[in-house]
Amino acid sequence: MTARNFLLVGLTGGIATGKSTVSAMFRARGCIVIDADILAREVVEPGQPAYERIVAAFGPRVVAPDGALDRKALGSIVFADPQRRKELEAITHPEIRARFAARLAELTEQGFDGIVIFDAAVMIESGNYKNMDRMVVVTADAEAQVRRQRERDGASVEAATRRIASQMPLAEKVKLADHVIDNAGAREATAARVAEVHEALLEDLAARRR
Ligand code: ADP
Image (cartoon, rainbow, N blue to C red; front, side):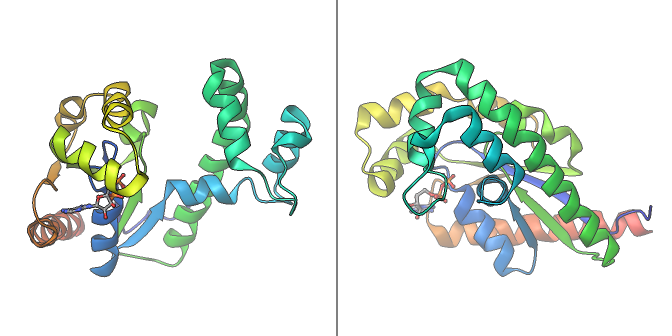
């Protein structure tokens, strides 16, 4: 097995702090982005092994008329029942991990020597941050997190506040960060900070080659 020549960078944050926004900025700068949400969607596509196992475990009520998985129906089942959530994750998580590993193997094989951003919401909670070369955490103040959830998701102040409270505190995530990107202000300020962090990551990559 050949060693990888790229820097693997974990990107996380809190709800509506701007992780997707920052990840798009890194992509625009030429980084390769692997999105955990997309991997999670791919592994449950019809024809994938996880699809069959989920339908067997949860029944036809989680299948939409077009044959795809009804993620909303599945979501409401596991949201209400932690045991069922565990059952679902026991099916999907190994598949997601395998897909992620396959993507990294492909990039290694190709000799990719830039920055790979792994965009994942619960990377710190899951312990997967330990597999990253560097960690970047996107922050915003709670007020902005509430405002942006209201604008994006139509959430009430109460629901938005509850979601923030149900997550691991941002301050805990920041402790594990090599770089913090504060996205409480204007997008332009965030883009400038992303450029700085990108430079620092490229520098780390170059230092590793020396
Ligand atoms: P996350 O991926 O962390 O949940 P998003 O990147 O989706 O967060 O951002 C949450 C919402 O806030 C989105 O609707 C996004 O367009 C908006 N947003 C993100 N950053 C800013 C910013 N700096 N100023 C204003 N709105 C922003």
